[in-house]
Length: 403
Image (cartoon, rainbow, N blue to C red):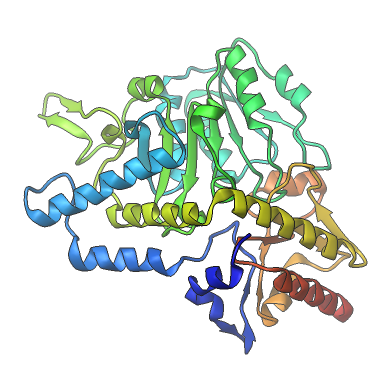
C-alpha cells in the first residue's frame, strides 16, 4: 500500500492553486512533476560539485565525473543492463531514437526495411522517414485494431529478407496499450532482426529489464520518471554499439585528432559528443532511487487500480468515448465527449484547475485511425488519487452541460 499523502508532500508543486482551485495534475504522460529530493540534488551539485567532466584533474571535475559515472551505473542496475558501458546518456527518448536511426541506420542500404507500428509517437516515425529520404530505407507499419491492440499476425507477415530493424513502443502514449514486447522481440530474433524499444511510457510505471526482454536497444526519458528535462538514456547491445559509427563529432568522443585522421573512444563515450548534462544525469539517479524506494510492485498495483477507477467513472458520462480498450493497459485514459472539441474541453477543465493534455499527442496516425483531429488525455502517476479522478469526472460533466 502507498502512503499517498506522504508521497504528495514530496512534490511541492502539487499544492499549487490554479485559478483559485487546487491543482489536479493529470498530464503525467507528457512530463512528471519532480520530488523535492531531485530538485535539491541538482541544486546541491551546482553549489558543491559543478565542473566539466572527464577533462579536469582538479577536485571539482573529479567529483562531477564520479557523480556522472555513478549515475551511469545506477541506470544500468535500474534496467538490468549487462554493463554500464552499454548506457548512453542522451537528451531524451527522441534523441536516442535519432541516434539509432542515424548511426545504425547509416549501415543500411536502399531497399532495406524497418518495421514500426501505427501507434508510434512521432519520435519513432520521423527519424525513420528521414532515413528513407537519405538512403531509401523503407518503412513497414503494423496496424492496430479499434481496441488499440497491434495485429500480431500482420506483424509476422511484414518480415522479409530485407528487414533490418523493428522499432516499437512498449506502451502507447495515447491508448495506454502495453504491447506484448517480449513476444514481438522473440519473433524478430527468429528472423535475425534486432529490436529497438521506446520505453518512454513504460519505465515510469513498471519494472523494465532489458535482459529479460532480450531487446537490442531501449530508450527512455528522465523527465517522465520524475527526473529533470534534458536527460535520457539509450541502452544498446554491445555487439551493435561497437559496430555503429559515432552519431555526432566533437569533444569527449575522440581518442586522437589530427588533420589527417581522427580516432574515437570506445562505448559509451563515442556517442556522447560535447559536455553532457552531468547534473541532470546525477538527478536522474536520485529520481530512480526515489522510485525504487516506493517500490514498483506497489506503484504498478496502485496505478492500475486508479486507471481502472478512472475508466469506470468516465464511462458513466453520457456521450463520452474512450479510445484504447486493450486488456493490457497502463495509466492513460484518452477520450472525447460528443461533438465537444478537445481543445474546448481541455481549456475549460483548466479553469477548474485540472491539467489534461489535448491535441494529437504527437501521434497523428492514431488520430487518423479513429477519424478524429485530437483527443483529451488524462494520464496518471502514483501521486494522483481517486478524489482527483472524481473531480475530473465532475468537471467533464460540467463542461458537457455547457454545450
